[in-house]
Image (cartoon, rainbow, N blue to C red; front, side):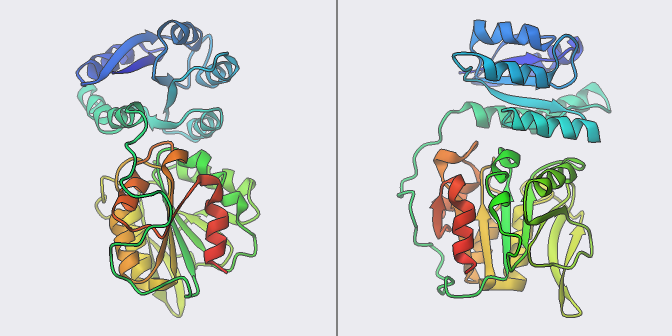
Amino acid sequence: MTKVLIVDDASVFRITLSNQLKKEENLEVVGAAKNGQEALEMVIKFSPDILILDLEMPVMDGLQTLEELKKMRPKPRCKVIMFSSHTVHGAENTLKALHLGAVDFVTKPSKGSLSEGQKEIKRTLIPLIHALGTGPAKPLTKPTTTLRPKIATRSSRGFRKDVVGLGVSTGGPESLLKVIPKLDADMRCPVLMVQHMPPIFTGQLAERLNAQSAINVKEAQDGDVLKPGWVYIAPGGYHMVVEPEDGKNMIRLNQEPPANSCRPSVDVLFDSLAKHFGNRTLGIIMTGIGQDGMKGCEALKKNGASVISQNQETCVVYGMPRFVNEAGLSDEIVPLEDIADKAKYYLL
């Protein structure tokens, strides 16, 4: 049973969310606090597994609460999910919250009827709670070392890599800080990245990564020409693909239907890279819920590309890499801290 503590200053929202969570199997709402100060007391009293934390609250806000949680000894075991608003200020504070220890966030329903808000909570928040509250994933039946791909493919290690595709979701913003800043400014190929995030947040993430990296990082724009030494992040709400034009490889953005309930989708990006770069592609799959990226990795492997995936032990949620690994699509499974160095090896 996963114990959940709700922290929000809006009583209607606390009641609505509590009622929805109580309908879920294996979830128990142990308390509902109206500010961070009350939350800290309830964390000690109830030892929740999941803390759903609002950012804007009186007395003690979400960021202050996270700072106090870090000071507590023994350290609370709870995983924190932030509620964030659809604003630039909300996105900035959300990224700060992730840096302070929150594992992920969902955007708070702010428009529409109560029933529409309930549907949004069921679609986004509840699956996240279940994924974070299930504990460690069951071990793979195969060893977590280099695997032989099930899909027959010609060897790709000896082919020059001209592009890197990276897919990540839950736990991504902080995990990326252990990968992107390690890439060299003179890297000879571009990196195209899908991080599952809403609009505004992807732009804030790009700015944050760019400020801490030697390599250039930007939110992709339609018509961008791929350049070596640049990381392009798909903007929230848009699929990102590559199309050759006048001898150059250009980024194209579209709002075609979601794939795996995701837009942007890793599968859509990887399919495009498989089509246009084939065995000159290096695919990287990192922490995240669901299986977005698995079919894209199949397409990459069929075209002779290489795939690196994050190992179970260092994932916030062992979902996306798990599907890829268990399908035998990973050339190598490595810890988070080794991903950048392993990528450089493939790019030699």
